[in-house]
Structures are given as C-alpha cells and as structure tokens.
Length: 115
Length: 109
Image (cartoon, rainbow over all chains, first blue to last red; front, side, top):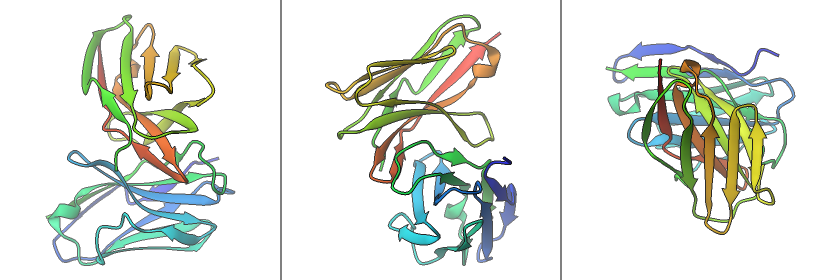
C-alpha cells in the first residue's frame, strides 16, 4: 500500500491567494483527519471525516478554511484567502475503523508558506 | 487542545545510550500511543498501550503506563543516529487523537 498521499509537499504563495491541499487516504480507511502543525501550537486537529461525512469541524480556525471529501479516496483542504499566519505544515491522516481509537496513518505533510 | 505533555522538551544523548521520555495526561483513557516524527516527515506510529496494560515492548522500545498517575514513559535502548527525531505521545478522546508538544531527541555519533 502506498500510504496516505498528500500534495503538494511544498507551497509558497502570497497573502490573499487561494490554497488547495489534497489528500488520498489509504484504501479501505473510513476515517480521515486534517491536522495543522506549528512550532507555537503543536499539532491541532482541524477536521474529522467519517465515511466521507464531516463529523467535527470545530478545529477549523475560521471561515477562510473549508474541507471536502467528495469520495472515499480524496479530500481537500482549502484556504481562501490565505494569510501569513496560515503558514504551517498540514497533515492528512487516515484510520481503518469507524469510531475507533487506534493508530493513525499520516501523510508526509504539505508545508505551506504564505508571504 | 493538548491532552498529553511530554518531558523533557529536548534530549541529547550519545549513540548507544538509552533515552527516556515521559508523558502526562489529564483525563481517563482507553489507550495511549507514541509516535515518531523525523525532520520534515509525517508522524509514524510506534506503539499503542492499552489502559489495562502496564508495560509493552517493541524491539528496542519499552513503554510503561501508570493510569493512577496518568503518566507514561517511552524508553529507547541502545540508541542509534537514526533515532534522532521528535517523539509524541497521543491520547484518544472519542474519535479524536490529541498530541503533546513532543520531545526532540538528538543522538550524537
């Protein structure tokens, strides 16, 4: 299995631009998570999908952030408009079970720099 | 919110030495997990210990769990340069997994 695949690995953009991050979870995994990692705040959960349905988006910082999961093999995290404080590494992670509390499988992350 | 907190924040050891890091958490859990993150990479799951277990081994890793003290420790024995990474404890709260701030381990050759 190829693991969780994220793209792009690196993105540099200017303030005000739209950013779209992509994630392909491991086939057969029912749960998908988006996390953000910064030095100041560590790893923060942004949103959780189960069977393609957003269950908890309480971690999404503001309306500029949106996430979709149109099917079981693809999810996007969009920031519009982007701001310098959005600079971070964004991770997608998936897990096999529904309501499970087992291990997460992480992608390699998308490092976003907003100038 | 961060449920687990690791200690120390950073650790520097000589190759071949053991590295020990601790994690404290706040609420009741049914398991505790440890992850490793190499620089510029994603997190990788190392080991999961359930609340009814006190100790677990995996290769050179040894994890303990004390639910009465709400704490866990991760011991890496006979460290290698490749063990240089950040290590995170994580605790589930429902379907969510909350991560601590991590311990950065540097293994000197």
